[in-house]
Length: 136
Image 1: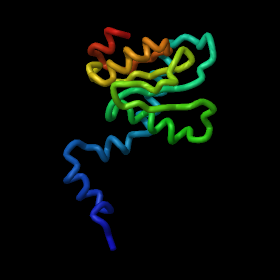
Image 2: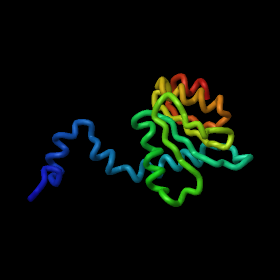
Image 3: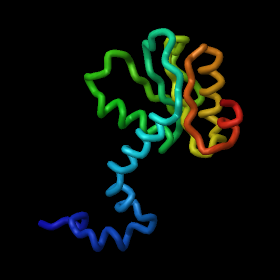
Image 4: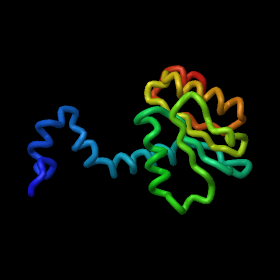
């Protein structure tokens, strides 16, 4: 039996936002993201990182989920994805926290940033602007 999902022409008719094409370029997007990260000029860690934390909502947090699945059992330190106002209690100065918000104005993510700061986490912000850009 043929599924409607097997017909790309039908999918393209229903795909008003062009997500099929976006997903088709996913590998190129990952390569571009890696290039941006490598050129960011982040300082070397001065002390060990014992945990990773990715904070964001919706699409801003999905990178953490992908990373966790991709690295799977290869990770030697915990990686947590936090979607909400609070961060895990383990977060401290040995935690590298990625605070992600496309708009930079997501209330929950701004709260997570403030908590990460209070917990002395090492913070990397990923945003296109807004309050998060100003805070970072």
